[in-house]
Length: 474
Ligand code: SF4
Image (tube, rainbow, N blue to C red; front, side):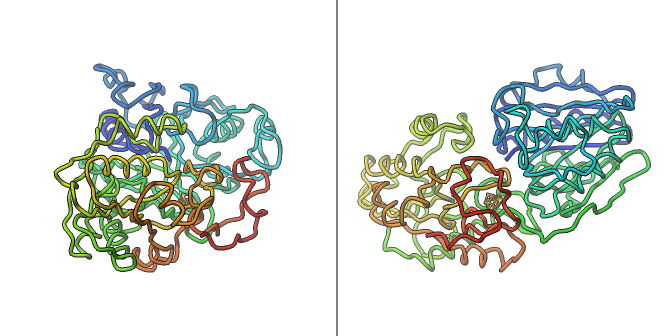
């Protein structure tokens, strides 16, 4: 997951815009946060473990003045979860030019080509990793640091050989680069600031928060270079586009635009289709807050059933899915959700969630509603069954953990204690995004848009061999 931000302003300062962007991108990662700013002479970095507001205290921003800056919020999917994984990472080329890099995604492979010697030993595939726990971002940083060319030029050459899912931002003392992988797995967009400056961010809502106007998505395989000479764009590689559908389901903010579609409207469409395909006689539709609200609203409107906030969420605990470890997740659910008995008592409830990964949270939510007096609880999931791992930067790594891999919908329903449980189909999801063909739906269908390399992480080796399309998910 993770979120990235980059800002270049003709007269500076950029630190507040980067900070505001990170606050708006906090939902994409809560493990650590960091900012690097270049003032034309030097780069300064501040990063640490925790939320953006914990890492940056009063006065922090004054120490980070400059015309170019990048920022990052991190959720660890590779490379451990220690503070050492906080980004941006800084490096210096052989020619002595300093740079900072922040990255979102999952690098699967780097073609050897002219790799510098430090990098060869710890490619994620095709050879053992020299330093276990090394993040993708550190590998990329080391690759750039081993070059003689200026960082922007070295980045252009490197990106043509990097395979996987990534959005990255790079800053030197006076220049900003931003790039999106050739498939465009993760979103990245470009905005314009009122003073003529430029901003790139993981989501359009992040641009909004910093006062930038959305200009367009950064295109798959596109590299942007921004400095006092303006904005330059070039394409370093081409591949079939495959934007992550799980961004629409869960990851992105509902007020963001991805691929020209407002996430909130897509989620409502998921819910409306679910109501048409999986109807049930009920008195109230209740969302699992917060991500499932648009889908529940879509379901309620389409079914002509009352919508009610039957579960209230404590907003100060973060997103459960973002906290690694199943024991922590279970505890989080009890802390996070509380039922409203007046909404559900004696009523037949349709409980709508955006997705179902491990079923831990859903089991707790159903139990809460029953204890609050619900007469029936029918679960409706506004996405397809997740039965396959993600290799492209989302924490769906262990197939054994996935309820959809181990159980049928009816079995999951019994497991969570629901009167019934149904999913939207993968075809229904595609229909809800207007039949969009250029999507990754790998975790839903087991069919990935690119070959999964032989050296993929251990938790993913239980899927069929690389390059083979597995049978349809249950
Ligand atoms: S496998 Fe799933 S989570 Fe991963 S990029 Fe594809 S759609 Fe997104």
